[in-house]
Amino acid sequence: ISEFENGKYKLPIALGIDIGGKPIIADLNELPHLLIAGATGSGKSVCINNIILSIIYKLSPKTVKFIMIDPKRVELNIYNGIPHLLIPIITDISQAIKVLNWVISEMEKRFKIFAEAGVRNVNGYNEYVRNINNDTEPLPYIIIVIDELADLMLSSPVKAEESLCRLAQMTRATGIHLIIATQRPSVDIITGSIKVNFPSRIAFAVSTQVDSRTILDLNGAEKLLGNGDMLFSPVGAPKPIRAQGAFVVEKEIRNVVSYLMKHCPPPEYEQEVLEYKKSKNMLRETEEEEEDELFNEAVSIIINTKQASISILQRKLRIGYTRAARLIDAMEKRGIVGPYDGRNPRKILISNEEYLNKYEK
Image (tube, rainbow, N blue to C red; front, side, top):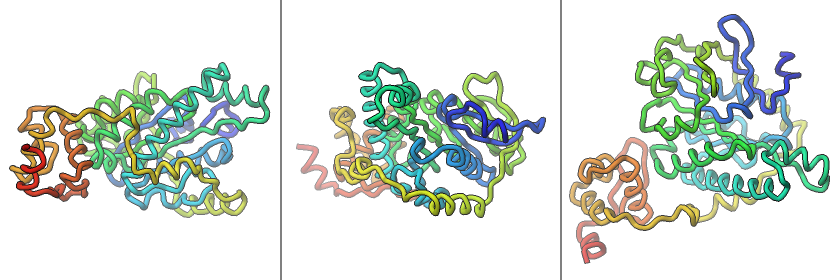
């Protein structure tokens, strides 16, 4: 406890205890992003709650702000209304992508501010503000929590992966940190690009060695016992640390949330992000691309096979997953196919005759 209270950690997270009974406390500022994965019921959601509570216990709403993305609508909803929130909890996938794009713009803005102030990172800038320019507010840390990643990756694979990887690559110096979690540790969710950019990982119990290797690049998670038994692999560690995650119950979370709401002013939501969420122009100008040369052929395949799926384009056009997903996204944007709808196939919104009139001229 004393290490957590008195340590020099910028963003301390108390994860649990190791096999010797020693507390494991990590600094999210050093990690600097975290990937959490494990089967249903293995302790993943409890770990996320534990991380959030660790940070709001230690840091004030002026020092740290959260963006919480909860497509399942049940895991993070309990935190709605806490003063540490930058915006209300996001449950809509399309809004989540827009907000990630806002975070990219905020990252770029912070880099410009640092350059003008002649500092290298958010800690240097805040020190500069405190010592020299007292009229300016220090910049808060921004922590993005995503539970569940699979919903984001399956609905908008290209946009989600591009946004997450760009943020993970560049945001460390700006005080923006990502915590992403999934109960589906498959290669289409935890892609190679995501793994490279999230070197700090926590694996809870999974069913197979393949799942373990997908998360950690080594076996072991398939032998974990569940109920918070985990392998913690921080960046730079030679091997994962076996640990028992701390257990926090819903009543404890509610007590903390009610205390914060009672003793702190209500959350001051960032209007710029709220406006960004409402914006119809979801893609940033820098992300707009020229039409793929295979677009018309891809539309023809979708119409003729009556299957609007990424896999059919991969097979028929002999292209990779990313390019096929991009083509499907482009078709959705033009109103040719419907949006992703869970396990149901996408609907094809135009007839063969309409297709011939539009694209075969």
